[in-house]
Length: 151
Image 1 (cartoon, rainbow, N blue to C red):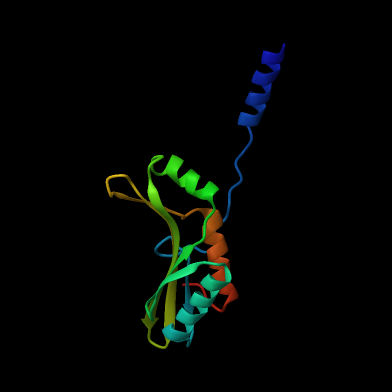
Image 2: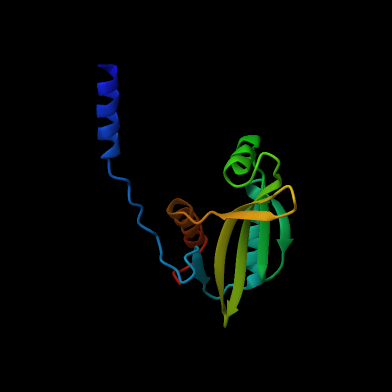
């Protein structure tokens, strides 16, 4: 009787529809992007560096064309990375956030990328992009919140 109940429950659970997440914006690169009218790359670069510092990330690179941050991650996230992206012997696990800034006349075009990267035992680098609807909508909303406009 218990097995019939479990099979029936599995059948019902399998029939559920997955939630469809509508994208906040569809961009040319499929990554979050926005145009900042009459804003310099330098001022935006500083804005993104401060945002990284506020979430506790380490700023790896800051220039007028790029801001790259290394997020602090827990041991649980590192273990997840080892299990699903690398091996138990993988090391040097990081989650990077990168803001690319491109000048377009008086405006600045910004693209946001986020990925997990780790090093395999023989030196090979593996990377997993965080390019999901949840991530894209959150990052796109952040760009709009600080003054960005759709591409």
